[in-house]
Amino acid sequence: MPQITKRTLLAAGLLAAAGGAKAQDLAGGPFVTRHSGVFNGRRVDYAASVGETLIPSPGGAPAARFVSTSYVARGASAKRPVLFAFNGGPSSSSQYLHMMALGPRRIAAPQDPAAPIGDLPTVDNAAAVLDVADLVLIDPAETGFSRILPGGRREGFYSVEGDARSVSDFVLAWLKANGREASPKYVLGESYGTLRAALMAGQLAAVSPLDGVFLFGQAVNMIETSQRAKNVLAYATNLPALAAIAAYHGRADTGKPMGAFIDETYAWGMGEYLQALVQGHDLPRSERERIAARLQAYTGIAAAYYLANDLVITKIAFARELLKDQGLILGTYDARYVGPAPPPGARPADPYGKVVEAVRPAMLAHLSGFLKVPWPAEAYRTSAPDTQSWNWNGTLGPGGPFLDYDYQARVGPAFQANPDFRLMIGTGIYDLTTTVGPARYLVSKSDWPRERVIQRQYVGGHMAYTHEPSLRAFTDDIRAFVTGKPLADGGNA
Image (cartoon, rainbow, N blue to C red; front, side):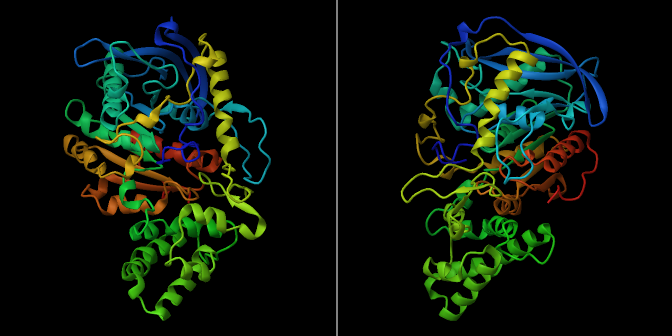
């Protein structure tokens, strides 16, 4: 997710920016349709609406036209919870959460990661949370059908602060326009969207505090846990993901349930392993060999590799090395998926990519068929154009969330502003981008009240909800989160 390249932004939604239509060319709306569906065993009559919300500039003129999709139960209380959701990037549309997890219709991926991936069917999503909450899928500026207007400037939206502020402004405007100021408000962000959600939590704390934030595939502490050279902490925090993936592929023997194996490798990684990495070349040879042997047992990578590489392996190298003897490479976004290793010097295609590529046509068919939106398909943008100019808190271009910025501190005011505010963090255990260890470390390093922080692990990758048991666990967790009911133990991993 974090590096601004097509390969690493694949699952976060930056496959290709499509459509050059201007906002004024997308006339009409809102487009409102009425539906009925069964969600979590309960029939719900609801209205689906695709419509615009104008975001003002500091001077009051319209700066951007956000086009969102909302699903609102008919006849429900004005105090019914509202869940606002968005994907990552920066900056992508919400089509992935929309058509893979949260919307009333979703694509159905093969449940065996080794199965061929052809055309994926769209099915009713009985796991959607419309039985307990209304849903608003947000397409930030320049994504989907949302556009910056002549009264706005791209640089005002193409920044960490400006992007988050514009989405916060959208939430406030949507609540006011729909008479929902009294509703409990929840925000769910995925991948880069977790950085956006963290900033929004702090921004809204001063004006209309949120009731909860769900960070899914969190990247909030990427500055600490990215695998830059000599950043030893990153190799310790990311070890549990390598171990879980090695066990999935039969290259490590857990000897225990996966959740317990992840606990064990995290404890050893953040203890003995981290201390060994800190000692570096001062570590005695016998100790280096012992640590390398333990790493081989946990990750399936030969001890000789670790001894030749200062006791570390990057996640990218791990994806290349684990099944090298079979001529295979792992998926970055879901390492259960494998594909042929590319020739030397060639850029590998992510084996999970065909699942991701199925989302855009499904989203377009949903817009035109289910939601009756007449706008041309080519105007719908999977991602915003020219995001290489994104301003990362004063620095343009490369660097991204690796730059020195304390994202997690922005969540603190949300806890202070609302004594009932809660934070949930969910991670796919086979994700090689935003992994389970950094999520745990994020909480350990925070001063957040522990009784209001919930951590979850799911079987699957960056988009763990393509694994249907994880979809159910994910949506059940959201369901409990927005209703204040107890959650089941530990997600589904």
